[in-house]
Image 1 (cartoon, one colour):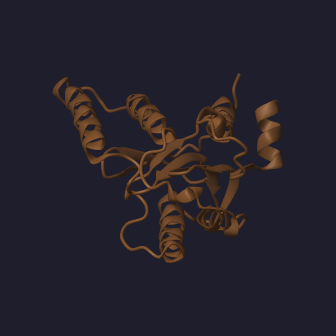
Image 2: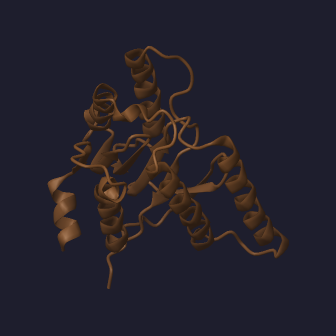
Length: 213
């Protein structure tokens, strides 16, 4: 029997496109990407398809359950990940100076605002597995990460304009197998994208131990 990682009280926060399931003390897998990492016409097409799927639920008067949201999210997350791994856009995170800015930001408030289990900085997106702590929320943490790193990365690149896409993907991890899957996916992303000798990937000793169990 798998150990549940969910607290009893789950809240729903409405995002730009889908509800986000949140709960104090929960662990999340998140992905945030560069502003130019997906062509606008591709993203618009996926958004229309996702809206049509949601509309079918509403027309059928079916409740949009956590399971249904998970299915919709995973469908589009996998599509997006495949496109991201192809390396579309400026891929500013290939620049070691920019990747270091992001890596330092991810680790800056560990133990104070969140527990960080794993992360991977790809050329045009970032994966992380984390647990907010001490009353800090996932939206607050994401705003801090993206706000600081976007400003510093633009300064390092001598550019202006949006650095990150506004919305981000998050998945509420429900049990130990999902945690292990999220950590493995994060660590294996460079290999799947055929990035040789990619150094911008990390996991805590505790996370690696839990994955091996």
